[in-house]
Structure formats: C-alpha cells, structure tokens
Length: 73
Image (tube, rainbow, N blue to C red; front, top):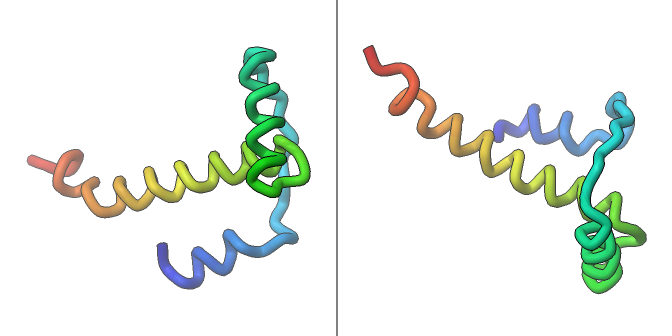
C-alpha cells in the first residue's frame, strides 16, 4: 500500500458507516473471549482488526497479481 493511501487508512476521522451483521451466537461468544485475551476492549474492535488485516492482504494480492491473472488478452 502506498504511503498516502496508508495515511488515509490510519486517519481516525474518516467517515464511518454503521452496518448490521448476523453471526452465530457461539461465534460471537468466541469473539468476545478472544478479544479480551488479545487486549481488545470488546469484540467489535477485534472484528474491525480481522477485517482490516484480511482486506489489506487481499488488496495487496490483487495489486500484485491482477495483471497476471485478469488482464491476459
């Protein structure tokens, strides 16, 4: 990720959108337990961290390999 894009991602004042997410109750309980063990205040910041980590990984993969797999003529 380029420096400017990273700076924008780290900006705490970015616009936020509220969503509703349905997940199984046992998964939520696991998230709560794991969040506390990892030092998060609650499960929601942990979910955001998981999403952010996987999203960055997927975006980087697409950036590196997009031309190789998707732009062949």
